[in-house]
Amino acid sequence: MNINHKEITRCADLSCLKFTDDELQKLHVNMSEIINWVNDIKEVKTEHIDITYDTSITSIIGRDDKSVEIEDPKIILSNSNSVEENMFCVPKVVNKNE
Amino acid sequence: MNELTTINIHEAINHLKKKDFSVLELIGAHFKRIEETKHLNAFITSNYDKAMDSAKKSDSIIRENKMRNLEGIPIAVKDNFCTKNIRTTASSKILHNFVPQYESTVTRNMLNEGCIITGKTSLDEFGMGSSNKTSFFGKVKNPVGKNKMEYHVPGGSSGGSAVAVSSFSSMGALGTDTGGSIRQPAAFCGVVGLKPTYGRCSRFGIMAFASSLDQAGSLTRTVEDASIMLRTMASYDKKDSTSSRNSLENLLLPISEDISKLNIGIPTEYMKENIASDIFNSWEMSAKWLKEGGANLVEIDLPHSKYSLSTYYIISSAEASSNLSRYDGIRFGYRSNDNNIKDLYVNSRSDGFGEEVKRRIMIGTYVLSKGHYDSYYLHALKVRQLIKQDFINAFKKVDAIILPTTPYPAPPLNKNTDNPIEMYMNDIFTVPASLAGIPAISLPVGLTKDGRPTSIQVMGPSFKENTILKVGKFIETAANFSKIKNQEKML
Image: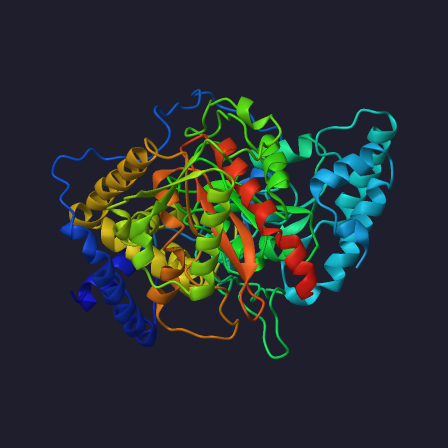
């Protein structure tokens, strides 16, 4: 099965990734080969099989829904490249023309 | 090479107890060895200053006779464990400057028992690969089996950790195993690699690749050391929703080598695979040793195992595409210089991730997308259940299963391939245990004619690490690999 070019660009858009034309061409070949390769699982009959999300844990226990106070906000912000007044900076989300 | 770097963890603990040498001497000898083996590129970040400070503290604790279980033992840590105030990169450009402000539970457990972190080791970017060639910080070289002309690949993704242990730069190392990332590099580098049961060690603070498969484990030079490390690494952790409360009681006992009442499974399906003759011989030899030791060999069927690789690559890529969506350049990591938010996201991710990571994100997005979700992702989850059921059925008849860790020994470092499927085939013998969530240990048993290690893998039922350690220790004694290694002068 060949993945078509439109599906590749759609996946790139969903993944927030961009590729050059050469990269897209190579990716097209690789993805088609990989998807063809994994197609063998379709021959397994699974009509009455329960889904398993994990394999050893019988019950998933959530954390207590309690907020944790951080003494110094600088700890949270320390790895960002752009910080002002104890806040993360991002470019303008809405531009004048939009 | 200083003899302080060639002893194992078990021996070092006893020597430190008797005050035969100081922790400062032990850690100093290891940093000297790290410098001597720098060309192997096993480490990304050194922790020299903090480690030397910790060594002084450990010496004073030992003087006060308050020694903890792993007091003063040097360990290397795969660079996908978050270590507080020590740069943690996952071998990716997108995290090249990331300094965590918190400690992973597993490294916290190790530090609490007196371990000393010497540095952070290289890996395939975000754990995605089997060669350690996809690291942003360059290829790692496998010192074992090197001939005059070339090095071999160390395997991956925990390649840096495996090389650190095999080159005597570290007594033990932490790794993570998603589809074989501890066992395969252990096999290529001639060391012991243990992947515990899923849930045995907390995933908190480990950079997620595929959350339903990721598991922390160890790389050591002996099975005994693997057991010692596991006792400290493992814990129930409420910060990890899939962490297990299963008792560690059976891990606290010394490993017995009595295998006389055990039934050992040999999965016949795998005999049809293309296996290098030296590897196949090691498999047969291991079975022979076990039989001579009184074990009963039983042929078993794992009928869905042939679908393991496909199932693994669908599920792991789907989970990776979701887990890696957090990297956007805003709160941490590499950030592109853009004035538009959408461009900033796209360019930070496109420039920050390497080729293999982007390929897996794309595959994951494809199998999760409308029109393909049911036929790929959902279907793979169901096939995974069948694979797990095969193991449950097999473990009704046998106590452990043995098969090779890899189908062939470490390939040359400079062998290039443009075909990702060829790389994925490396994992054919390791992914079934990952999908089933069961524990498995890889240990070296021999050498090929040109000096590359051959290894065997022992798998057991969930939370029966004691059984695979017992079988592993028996095979380790029979193979006497350390003697072979010294005779061959591999390093």
